[in-house]
Length: 204
Image (cartoon, rainbow, N blue to C red; front, side, top):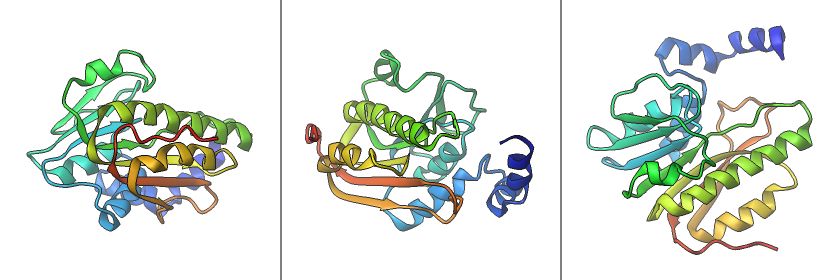
């Protein structure tokens, strides 16, 4: 990527707008788009943001749930302080993470995790699906009945099987791609509403 990536990013209107508005990343526009169109957040909600660095989604979530809400951001990288956001530095798959999150369940679990891009599409897609399933394994333990789930994934041949594991656990399921996603990107966002604990399908 290197220099070409830097130039393309500087020319990207969402990147420039994020910088101008103090949103930390262009990804904030993706979650804003989703939250404007789908009932993801409610005032006073408790939200878990997986793969949170640099904090763009946590900032949006904190604003949406208001002063009575709480956001817990998880990432092995540093997330600079955000009002009403608790930061836990950890890998999502760490065995002690669920206990560090405490006994209170979450109304919303978000995952905007991306793999380290190799440039080999099949590899990047497989890694992206693996990250989503790691997040999903945790979400099943910490998401409230009736809760909401939002996760980024790269489209590809492994996605249908992954969706078959997640979709049965929700009353409503949605695939979408926000305008702030780059046109050439294969990323999609999966949204689940009305979580039913224990309803996961094992798939084929």
